[in-house]
Length: 359
Ligand code: SF4
Ligand code: SF4
Image (tube, rainbow, N blue to C red; front, side, top):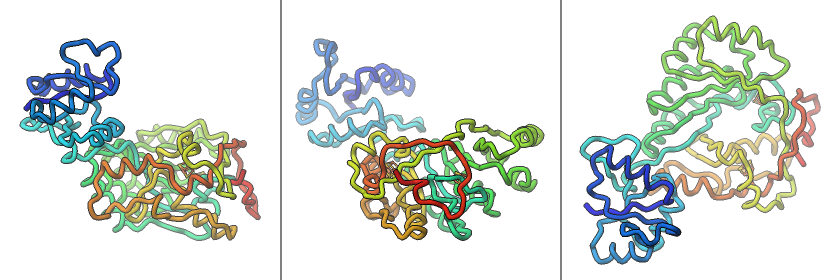
Protein backbone atom coordinates (compact mmCIF):
# COMPACT_ATOMS: atom_id res chain seq x y z
CA UNK A 1 0.00 0.00 0.00
CA UNK A 2 1.24 3.51 -0.86
CA UNK A 3 -0.25 6.42 1.08
CA UNK A 4 0.35 10.13 1.55
CA UNK A 5 -0.19 11.55 5.03
CA UNK A 6 -2.60 14.48 4.82
CA UNK A 7 -3.39 16.95 7.59
CA UNK A 8 -2.00 19.98 9.38
CA UNK A 9 1.78 20.02 9.03
CA UNK A 10 2.05 20.19 12.84
CA UNK A 11 0.40 16.78 13.06
CA UNK A 12 2.64 14.99 10.51
CA UNK A 13 5.27 14.04 13.06
CA UNK A 14 2.77 12.40 15.43
CA UNK A 15 1.22 10.52 12.51
CA UNK A 16 4.65 9.30 11.35
CA UNK A 17 5.51 8.13 14.86
CA UNK A 18 2.19 6.31 15.15
CA UNK A 19 2.79 4.62 11.79
CA UNK A 20 6.27 3.63 12.99
CA UNK A 21 4.89 2.26 16.25
CA UNK A 22 2.44 0.01 14.44
CA UNK A 23 4.97 -1.09 11.84
CA UNK A 24 3.21 0.51 8.87
CA UNK A 25 5.64 3.35 8.09
CA UNK A 26 6.69 1.62 4.83
CA UNK A 27 3.29 2.55 3.41
CA UNK A 28 3.98 6.29 3.79
CA UNK A 29 5.37 7.85 0.61
CA UNK A 30 4.74 11.56 1.20
CA UNK A 31 3.22 14.38 3.22
CA UNK A 32 0.56 16.93 2.33
CA UNK A 33 -1.38 19.84 3.80
CA UNK A 34 -3.87 22.36 2.40
CA UNK A 35 -1.15 24.97 2.54
CA UNK A 36 2.41 23.64 2.58
CA UNK A 37 3.96 27.00 3.50
CA UNK A 38 7.65 26.56 4.38
CA UNK A 39 7.48 22.84 3.61
CA UNK A 40 6.56 23.31 -0.07
CA UNK A 41 10.10 22.77 -1.36
CA UNK A 42 10.78 19.47 0.41
CA UNK A 43 11.17 16.30 -1.70
CA UNK A 44 8.55 14.46 0.35
CA UNK A 45 5.78 17.06 0.32
CA UNK A 46 2.92 17.30 -2.18
CA UNK A 47 0.38 20.02 -2.81
CA UNK A 48 -3.28 19.05 -2.84
CA UNK A 49 -3.41 19.08 -6.65
CA UNK A 50 -0.20 17.00 -6.96
CA UNK A 51 -1.60 14.48 -4.47
CA UNK A 52 -4.85 14.25 -6.46
CA UNK A 53 -2.89 13.62 -9.66
CA UNK A 54 -0.90 10.80 -8.03
CA UNK A 55 -4.18 9.28 -6.82
CA UNK A 56 -5.81 9.52 -10.25
CA UNK A 57 -2.75 7.97 -11.90
CA UNK A 58 -2.80 5.08 -9.43
CA UNK A 59 0.62 6.05 -8.03
CA UNK A 60 -0.84 6.12 -4.52
CA UNK A 61 -3.64 3.98 -3.10
CA UNK A 62 -5.14 6.72 -1.00
CA UNK A 63 -4.54 9.18 1.79
CA UNK A 64 -3.81 8.58 5.47
CA UNK A 65 -5.41 11.33 7.52
CA UNK A 66 -2.97 12.49 10.20
CA UNK A 67 -5.81 13.50 12.52
CA UNK A 68 -8.59 10.94 12.17
CA UNK A 69 -11.19 13.19 13.85
CA UNK A 70 -10.56 16.24 11.68
CA UNK A 71 -13.70 16.31 9.52
CA UNK A 72 -12.61 19.59 7.89
CA UNK A 73 -9.72 17.75 6.23
CA UNK A 74 -11.88 14.72 5.44
CA UNK A 75 -14.38 16.91 3.63
CA UNK A 76 -11.61 18.50 1.56
CA UNK A 77 -10.50 15.05 0.38
CA UNK A 78 -14.05 14.05 -0.49
CA UNK A 79 -14.67 17.29 -2.36
CA UNK A 80 -11.64 16.90 -4.61
CA UNK A 81 -12.54 13.28 -5.35
CA UNK A 82 -10.24 11.23 -3.12
CA UNK A 83 -12.47 8.60 -1.59
CA UNK A 84 -9.85 6.14 -0.35
CA UNK A 85 -9.26 7.78 3.02
CA UNK A 86 -7.46 5.82 5.72
CA UNK A 87 -6.79 6.34 9.44
CA UNK A 88 -4.92 4.59 12.21
CA UNK A 89 -7.72 4.03 14.75
CA UNK A 90 -7.48 4.37 18.55
CA UNK A 91 -7.72 0.63 19.06
CA UNK A 92 -5.36 -1.07 16.64
CA UNK A 93 -5.61 -4.74 16.03
CA UNK A 94 -2.17 -6.03 15.08
CA UNK A 95 -2.97 -7.21 11.63
CA UNK A 96 -4.83 -4.12 10.56
CA UNK A 97 -3.23 -0.92 11.85
CA UNK A 98 -4.45 1.09 8.86
CA UNK A 99 -8.18 1.04 8.31
CA UNK A 100 -10.48 2.67 5.85
CA UNK A 101 -12.03 5.77 7.43
CA UNK A 102 -15.59 4.68 6.71
CA UNK A 103 -15.03 1.29 8.39
CA UNK A 104 -14.09 2.74 11.79
CA UNK A 105 -16.49 4.58 14.04
CA UNK A 106 -15.18 7.93 15.26
CA UNK A 107 -14.61 8.85 18.90
CA UNK A 108 -17.35 11.01 20.40
CA UNK A 109 -16.08 13.46 22.98
CA UNK A 110 -19.04 13.29 25.32
CA UNK A 111 -22.69 12.49 25.67
CA UNK A 112 -25.18 13.75 28.25
CA UNK A 113 -28.15 11.68 29.28
CA UNK A 114 -30.99 12.63 31.65
CA UNK A 115 -31.79 9.84 34.10
CA UNK A 116 -34.50 12.09 35.55
CA UNK A 117 -35.75 15.36 34.05
CA UNK A 118 -37.05 16.68 37.38
CA UNK A 119 -35.02 17.78 40.36
CA UNK A 120 -35.11 18.02 44.14
CA UNK A 121 -33.56 21.48 44.05
CA UNK A 122 -35.01 24.49 42.27
CA UNK A 123 -32.15 26.61 41.02
CA UNK A 124 -33.27 29.85 39.41
CA UNK A 125 -32.76 29.72 35.64
CA UNK A 126 -31.78 26.00 35.55
CA UNK A 127 -30.43 25.49 32.01
CA UNK A 128 -32.29 22.17 31.75
CA UNK A 129 -35.59 23.69 33.04
CA UNK A 130 -35.61 21.00 35.73
CA UNK A 131 -37.02 23.39 38.33
CA UNK A 132 -40.23 23.78 36.30
CA UNK A 133 -40.75 20.10 35.43
CA UNK A 134 -44.12 19.71 37.11
CA UNK A 135 -44.06 15.95 37.82
CA UNK A 136 -41.46 13.15 38.02
CA UNK A 137 -40.08 12.25 34.58
CA UNK A 138 -37.72 9.27 34.56
CA UNK A 139 -35.74 7.91 31.62
CA UNK A 140 -36.97 4.66 30.12
CA UNK A 141 -34.32 2.05 30.94
CA UNK A 142 -35.10 -0.26 27.99
CA UNK A 143 -34.79 2.64 25.56
CA UNK A 144 -31.47 3.70 27.12
CA UNK A 145 -30.15 0.14 26.89
CA UNK A 146 -31.04 0.04 23.19
CA UNK A 147 -29.72 3.55 22.44
CA UNK A 148 -26.38 3.30 24.25
CA UNK A 149 -25.63 -0.01 22.53
CA UNK A 150 -26.60 1.56 19.22
CA UNK A 151 -24.05 4.30 19.94
CA UNK A 152 -21.43 1.60 20.51
CA UNK A 153 -22.05 0.50 16.90
CA UNK A 154 -21.72 4.07 15.62
CA UNK A 155 -18.72 5.25 17.67
CA UNK A 156 -15.49 3.48 18.55
CA UNK A 157 -15.57 5.22 21.93
CA UNK A 158 -17.26 7.97 23.90
CA UNK A 159 -14.73 9.73 26.10
CA UNK A 160 -17.19 10.82 28.80
CA UNK A 161 -20.75 9.71 29.44
CA UNK A 162 -22.54 12.11 31.77
CA UNK A 163 -25.55 10.65 33.59
CA UNK A 164 -27.40 13.67 34.90
CA UNK A 165 -30.72 15.48 34.96
CA UNK A 166 -32.49 16.98 36.79
CA UNK A 167 -31.22 14.99 39.70
CA UNK A 168 -30.04 11.52 38.60
CA UNK A 169 -30.08 10.06 42.11
CA UNK A 170 -33.88 10.47 42.17
CA UNK A 171 -34.03 7.52 39.77
CA UNK A 172 -33.97 4.31 41.84
CA UNK A 173 -32.71 2.40 38.79
CA UNK A 174 -29.59 4.51 38.39
CA UNK A 175 -27.40 1.44 39.05
CA UNK A 176 -28.86 -0.29 35.98
CA UNK A 177 -28.11 2.75 33.82
CA UNK A 178 -24.50 2.79 35.08
CA UNK A 179 -23.95 -0.91 34.43
CA UNK A 180 -25.46 -0.66 30.96
CA UNK A 181 -23.35 2.38 30.03
CA UNK A 182 -20.24 0.48 31.16
CA UNK A 183 -21.31 -2.61 29.22
CA UNK A 184 -21.59 -0.53 26.04
CA UNK A 185 -18.37 1.50 26.52
CA UNK A 186 -15.74 -0.30 28.55
CA UNK A 187 -13.21 2.56 28.62
CA UNK A 188 -15.47 5.63 28.79
CA UNK A 189 -15.34 7.97 31.77
CA UNK A 190 -18.78 7.61 33.30
CA UNK A 191 -19.73 10.61 35.41
CA UNK A 192 -22.84 11.05 37.53
CA UNK A 193 -23.55 14.77 37.94
CA UNK A 194 -25.50 15.39 41.14
CA UNK A 195 -26.47 18.26 43.39
CA UNK A 196 -25.41 16.03 46.30
CA UNK A 197 -28.67 16.17 48.30
CA UNK A 198 -29.26 12.42 48.03
CA UNK A 199 -25.62 11.41 48.07
CA UNK A 200 -25.57 10.54 51.76
CA UNK A 201 -28.54 8.22 51.40
CA UNK A 202 -27.17 6.10 48.53
CA UNK A 203 -27.66 2.37 49.11
CA UNK A 204 -24.71 0.04 49.67
CA UNK A 205 -25.64 -1.65 46.42
CA UNK A 206 -25.43 1.61 44.48
CA UNK A 207 -22.07 2.44 46.08
CA UNK A 208 -20.81 -1.00 45.03
CA UNK A 209 -22.00 -0.46 41.43
CA UNK A 210 -20.40 2.98 41.32
CA UNK A 211 -17.07 1.58 42.47
CA UNK A 212 -17.13 -1.57 40.36
CA UNK A 213 -17.84 0.46 37.25
CA UNK A 214 -15.25 3.12 37.97
CA UNK A 215 -17.78 5.96 38.04
CA UNK A 216 -16.89 9.55 38.90
CA UNK A 217 -19.37 11.50 41.04
CA UNK A 218 -19.37 15.17 40.12
CA UNK A 219 -21.04 17.23 42.85
CA UNK A 220 -22.26 20.75 42.13
CA UNK A 221 -21.13 22.97 44.96
CA UNK A 222 -24.28 24.97 45.75
CA UNK A 223 -24.11 27.14 48.84
CA UNK A 224 -27.22 25.56 50.36
CA UNK A 225 -25.43 22.22 50.82
CA UNK A 226 -23.36 21.01 53.75
CA UNK A 227 -20.12 20.37 51.91
CA UNK A 228 -18.19 19.20 54.97
CA UNK A 229 -20.59 16.30 55.42
CA UNK A 230 -20.38 15.45 51.70
CA UNK A 231 -16.59 15.55 51.67
CA UNK A 232 -16.43 13.31 54.74
CA UNK A 233 -18.92 10.88 53.18
CA UNK A 234 -16.88 10.70 49.97
CA UNK A 235 -13.73 9.97 51.98
CA UNK A 236 -15.41 7.38 54.22
CA UNK A 237 -16.75 5.50 51.21
CA UNK A 238 -13.61 5.99 49.13
CA UNK A 239 -15.59 7.34 46.18
CA UNK A 240 -14.03 8.86 43.10
CA UNK A 241 -15.60 12.32 43.36
CA UNK A 242 -15.11 15.98 42.56
CA UNK A 243 -16.74 19.05 44.06
CA UNK A 244 -17.43 21.52 41.25
CA UNK A 245 -16.77 24.86 42.86
CA UNK A 246 -17.73 27.12 39.95
CA UNK A 247 -21.44 26.88 40.71
CA UNK A 248 -21.94 30.33 42.24
CA UNK A 249 -23.25 31.93 39.06
CA UNK A 250 -25.76 30.90 36.42
CA UNK A 251 -26.56 32.52 33.08
CA UNK A 252 -29.75 33.36 31.19
CA UNK A 253 -29.59 33.03 27.42
CA UNK A 254 -33.10 32.62 25.92
CA UNK A 255 -34.03 35.06 23.17
CA UNK A 256 -37.78 34.53 23.05
CA UNK A 257 -38.07 36.44 19.73
CA UNK A 258 -36.00 33.80 17.93
CA UNK A 259 -34.19 36.32 15.75
CA UNK A 260 -30.58 35.53 16.67
CA UNK A 261 -27.98 34.75 14.04
CA UNK A 262 -27.86 31.02 14.67
CA UNK A 263 -24.42 30.53 13.15
CA UNK A 264 -22.85 33.28 15.23
CA UNK A 265 -24.54 32.20 18.47
CA UNK A 266 -23.75 28.53 17.90
CA UNK A 267 -20.09 29.18 17.18
CA UNK A 268 -19.60 31.09 20.40
CA UNK A 269 -21.73 28.79 22.59
CA UNK A 270 -19.87 26.51 24.99
CA UNK A 271 -22.99 24.31 25.34
CA UNK A 272 -22.75 23.19 21.70
CA UNK A 273 -20.36 20.46 22.88
CA UNK A 274 -22.83 19.09 25.43
CA UNK A 275 -24.06 16.42 23.00
CA UNK A 276 -27.36 15.11 24.27
CA UNK A 277 -29.10 11.75 23.88
CA UNK A 278 -32.79 11.09 24.43
CA UNK A 279 -35.13 8.42 23.06
CA UNK A 280 -33.03 7.49 20.04
CA UNK A 281 -32.24 11.09 19.14
CA UNK A 282 -29.13 13.21 19.53
CA UNK A 283 -28.47 16.95 19.34
CA UNK A 284 -25.61 19.33 20.03
CA UNK A 285 -27.13 20.28 23.39
CA UNK A 286 -30.15 19.49 25.55
CA UNK A 287 -32.14 22.56 24.46
CA UNK A 288 -34.37 20.96 21.76
CA UNK A 289 -35.28 18.19 24.22
CA UNK A 290 -36.12 20.33 27.24
CA UNK A 291 -37.75 23.36 25.56
CA UNK A 292 -41.10 21.56 25.95
CA UNK A 293 -41.02 22.27 29.70
CA UNK A 294 -40.60 26.00 29.10
CA UNK A 295 -43.32 25.99 26.42
CA UNK A 296 -45.76 24.09 28.65
CA UNK A 297 -45.17 26.38 31.59
CA UNK A 298 -45.29 29.71 29.74
CA UNK A 299 -47.33 28.86 26.63
CA UNK A 300 -44.38 29.74 24.41
CA UNK A 301 -43.09 28.24 21.15
CA UNK A 302 -39.39 27.50 21.51
CA UNK A 303 -38.36 24.84 18.93
CA UNK A 304 -38.87 21.27 20.11
CA UNK A 305 -37.26 18.24 18.48
CA UNK A 306 -36.96 20.03 15.13
CA UNK A 307 -35.97 17.56 12.41
CA UNK A 308 -32.97 19.78 11.55
CA UNK A 309 -31.81 19.93 15.17
CA UNK A 310 -32.14 16.31 16.24
CA UNK A 311 -30.42 13.33 14.69
CA UNK A 312 -32.19 9.99 14.61
CA UNK A 313 -29.50 7.43 15.52
CA UNK A 314 -31.52 4.73 13.74
CA UNK A 315 -31.88 6.68 10.48
CA UNK A 316 -31.09 4.41 7.51
CA UNK A 317 -27.53 5.02 6.22
CA UNK A 318 -26.44 7.07 9.22
CA UNK A 319 -22.96 6.49 10.65
CA UNK A 320 -20.86 8.04 13.39
CA UNK A 321 -19.01 10.36 11.01
CA UNK A 322 -22.25 11.72 9.57
CA UNK A 323 -23.56 12.29 13.09
CA UNK A 324 -20.39 14.17 14.04
CA UNK A 325 -20.73 16.32 10.91
CA UNK A 326 -24.31 17.18 11.80
CA UNK A 327 -23.50 17.93 15.43
CA UNK A 328 -21.32 20.85 14.36
CA UNK A 329 -24.11 22.51 12.36
CA UNK A 330 -26.05 25.39 14.00
CA UNK A 331 -29.55 24.37 15.06
CA UNK A 332 -32.93 26.11 14.69
CA UNK A 333 -32.95 26.25 18.49
CA UNK A 334 -29.86 28.49 18.38
CA UNK A 335 -32.02 31.30 16.94
CA UNK A 336 -33.69 31.37 20.34
CA UNK A 337 -30.43 31.79 22.24
CA UNK A 338 -28.50 34.98 22.85
CA UNK A 339 -25.30 35.91 24.56
CA UNK A 340 -25.12 34.67 28.13
CA UNK A 341 -26.05 37.14 30.85
CA UNK A 342 -24.80 35.82 34.15
CA UNK A 343 -26.44 36.22 37.55
CA UNK A 344 -25.71 34.97 41.03
CA UNK A 345 -26.95 31.46 41.78
CA UNK A 346 -30.09 31.29 43.93
CA UNK A 347 -33.28 29.30 44.41
CA UNK A 348 -36.34 30.21 42.34
CA UNK A 349 -39.47 31.44 44.02
CA UNK A 350 -43.09 30.76 43.08
CA UNK A 351 -44.45 31.89 40.74
CA UNK A 352 -41.31 31.09 38.75
CA UNK A 353 -40.69 33.99 36.40
CA UNK A 354 -39.85 33.23 32.76
CA UNK A 355 -37.47 36.18 32.89
CA UNK A 356 -35.20 33.86 34.91
CA UNK A 357 -34.21 32.52 31.46
CA UNK A 358 -35.08 35.28 29.01
CA UNK A 359 -32.78 38.09 27.99
S1 SF4 B 1 -29.57 21.09 40.86
FE1 SF4 B 1 -29.01 21.15 38.69
S2 SF4 B 1 -30.72 20.17 37.63
FE2 SF4 B 1 -31.42 20.67 39.71
S3 SF4 B 1 -32.43 22.66 39.46
FE3 SF4 B 1 -30.30 23.02 40.07
S4 SF4 B 1 -29.20 23.31 38.14
FE4 SF4 B 1 -31.15 22.35 37.65
S1 SF4 C 1 -29.42 25.81 21.17
FE1 SF4 C 1 -27.46 26.38 20.17
S2 SF4 C 1 -26.88 28.35 21.03
FE2 SF4 C 1 -28.48 27.48 22.35
S3 SF4 C 1 -27.42 26.42 23.97
FE3 SF4 C 1 -27.77 24.89 22.37
S4 SF4 C 1 -25.97 24.95 21.03
FE4 SF4 C 1 -25.95 26.78 22.31
